[in-house]
Image (tube, rainbow, N blue to C red; front, side, top):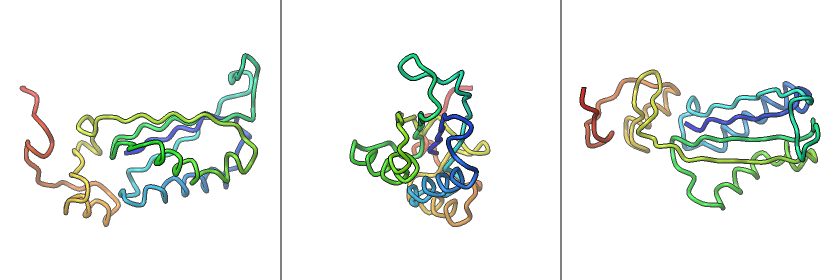
Length: 147
């Protein structure tokens, strides 16, 4: 589940641009069920957003927590940046990007662990665009904690 947080001034993007960014990010993850792609815009007023010790309302900070599939390499990050380029470099906006890989065994959706990538159950999630119960074994999801 890639969770994207875009920290920016309230007027950096219009509602339409935010929607277009969310669509571009979701399209980038076409191999995932779309409901797993989360994009949040977090407004930070100019008097609370500083770059180089000075207020800045034309800077974007992007934080991506990658839980579904780990970010494999720098080329992948660059292709992600290319997907949103019309909204960053294309608008003359400076930005910083941080991506982190999270352990997929430590996340769930509606209380369900996520099926193995490209498995039949995973493809069902993608087709339905929602999480549904699926059968899994301890060896697929990792060791269970003692209760």
